[in-house]
Amino acid sequence: MSPEITMLFKTLLLAVVQGIAEFLPISSSGHLLVLGRLLELPEIFTLSILLHLGTLASVIVFFRRELLDVLLRRQRAILLVIVGSIPTGIIGVIIVKYFDFLEESLLVTGLGFFVTGLLLVTLVRRHCCTEHQLYFDMVERSIEEEEIGMELEAPKTIETTSFLDALIVGTAQGISALPGLSRSGSTISAAAGLNFDREWAAEFSFFLSIPVILGGAALEIVKLVKSYQASGEESLLAMLRSDSMTTVYLIGMLVSFFVGWISLYYLMRLLKSGRLHYFAVWLFFMGVVCLAWNFWPDIMTQLDAAGLGDLVRRMFQ
Image 1 (cartoon, rainbow, N blue to C red):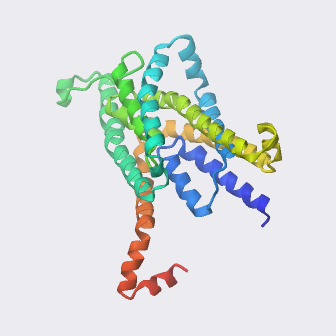
Image 2 (image 1 turned 90 degrees about the horizontal axis):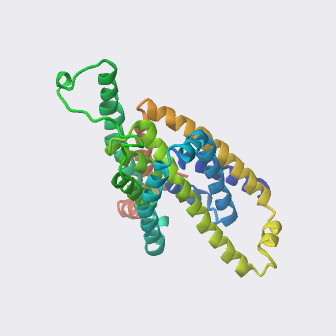
């Protein structure tokens, strides 16, 4: 297989994973780390920027009506996004500046997968499958709270979401910069714990994602500029033109856009039907894979000491 075909395959695979994992609650950073290790992928700044822009475009197109409504009538949502972005930015800068070594850690990634799975089966499942549905059943059937034996609050909407709520969800988004922690899973779980309406929880989560994705693309642009300065090319445009893979990267951007749009469609359906916590099964599986991979050298050392190392190696050959 020629290098060009191999790179096209790897680019398309990365684009599909980016489009799926960026929005479904399974952690794009964790999956891209695992995929990068398996395929031995170098860091390609141009491709990373274009994949970010592809997923950003899918958010804007999918929520175009909601975004237009926010700009014209529900400007309070803009304030909530600004407030929520403050802790996200602060925590994100701290992680990138002081804890960037964790981005390549399989141990941290594995633990992050487990934490995201636990959030889905606790906060999201309890909110979407019990309290949220019970509230609307009670309203629809005009049932009094005394009849069901518990007091239920109306789910929060744009009008009833406080700035403190936005800060908490934004904090969850900032922490999710750690690999294995899903951004959408963390923010939707935080919103569920704060009793957000299902659709509003998803909308606010993805409104918050817009500045984050832009920030991620900006960081990659900075890296690209530094790479250009070290390349000796006459201009940045000349460097990009000299890269024979630029067309392949653009194809990857289009794939990430379409896959991201489809992922958003299915996420909204799963959230409305109260089945978002089903992803926890995959997250727990990936957590086990990452932890086993991380401790594999130690496991093999122990197996060698017991005289079983060669047998295990032959099984996996």
